[in-house]
Image (cartoon, rainbow, N blue to C red; front, top):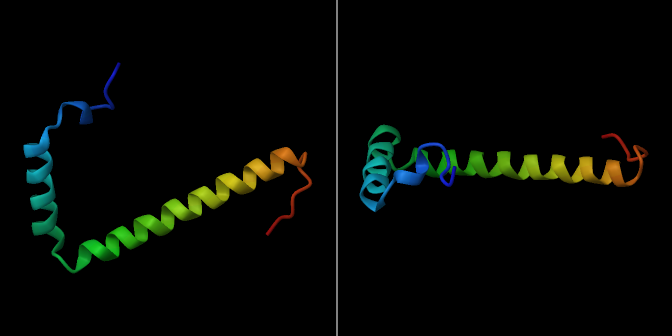
Length: 65
């Protein structure tokens, strides 16, 4: 399976149509807020992964917050 679920068959035209629909649904002012929230979520996930890696390396003796 060389493509990710259904994303592998999307071309530039389809992506533009999807972006236009998202813009119509959420509006220009709401999209930056959504992306900011998404960025915070990704950052939090990465921090959690780093904490787990440190805990594994230290044998479970890492500080708990």
